[in-house]
Length: 474
Ligand SMILES: C[S@@+](CC[C@H](N)C(=O)[O-])C[C@H]1O[C@@H](n2cnc3c(N)ncnc32)[C@H](O)[C@@H]1O
Image (cartoon, rainbow, N blue to C red; front, side, top):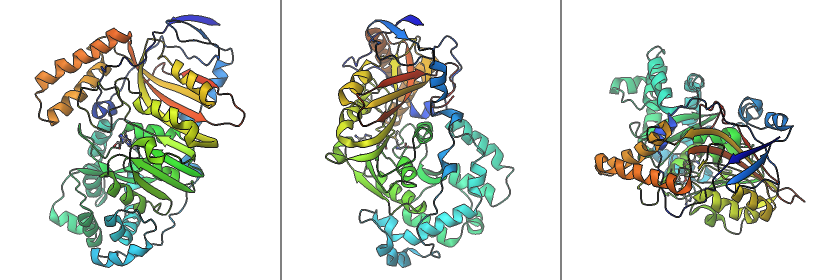
């Protein structure tokens, strides 16, 4: 079957346009768009304005084989390693100093090293608290809605579970008597030593990991969001020497460390170092991970890996619009994907694989993927692009358009700017971008790269966005 579609080239225009809100997007939900197609690859297709897309007859079978959604056996059920760390009894800050030598990595943050034994005990105490079982009930996607449902349910939980949920997960302050009766003194001391502040920080149950990160606000630095779950569900188990680019507090690096021999985690913000090590020790992975503060692929120049994962700042944001580092993916959202793809031949060992997620703009039938097709061929790397989600941007009242604008406005407000001034500027930036490129829709993607011996670089893609509800699942 051959279908003629209009697919305007959406190459970066040089000046940015869009701007999203991680905070709002995290809770966004979109209804299905029925006219979407599901297309598979054709090595002969082009992406010039008038595009001939070939839909192979075995497209349905191809799509069924995709490693997404329910077709996958959850990795966290397939394997579970006991933390290698011996469990010590709770120790005070001063006593913990004696455990410095048992902290395996030289690059471990000193506070994590000083609290090493106490953090290990923290993990044991968390596991015994039944918080994990309670949190396993909730959908990973839709941050705001999840918190609202947890808050409602917490009223029906027995103590101390109700208080612990409100304290660690929802960030509620507890009265001194409640803290005294529900939190052992050693745990309270560890929290104080580490400077954990439940108003600002929170505890996430990420598959079978405990992750400490910041609360989701328009100015969040130590990020965890829907996309963190999206990448974790996509990626294969870590193996050999693994690399997590844009590691943040270590969410993906620690998942990789469950099965990989070693993991290098690269993150630009040095302030993530403490939380990275805190999470590494709490989850018993400290002896397999390394935190490297640096700029993306430059931090590992000259090194090779068997497995690479990357949840980068992935939202399209005009260069002149202020936006949190965790979300600013450049004018077309592609800054990091482009950099990673061009570095991949030097980074990936033979037989190695890489998973990256992102967002981009496109026409009604999809974005322009010509660059990826060219990269696959020139780098001789197989690429599979899965597009699970699409949302219309054709009018300023479209929900995604509003999400993009509002996020920048909220961040501007956080920086002390007048929202009444920022909003029209940001809206105009979006509209200009759409006028210049002909883009009408916003897409999310999961990109899988594999370096196979003898492959000349196969590019495939599939669009699964019919009836999309969430950005990262169906
Ligand atoms: C969307 S967050 C992802 C965090 C984490 N990997 C996860 O999945 O939850 C993107 C992260 O990239 C980091 N980052 C931004 N620019 C970077 C750069 N040039 N090099 C390395 N990390 C960068 C941000 O600080 C932020 O922690």
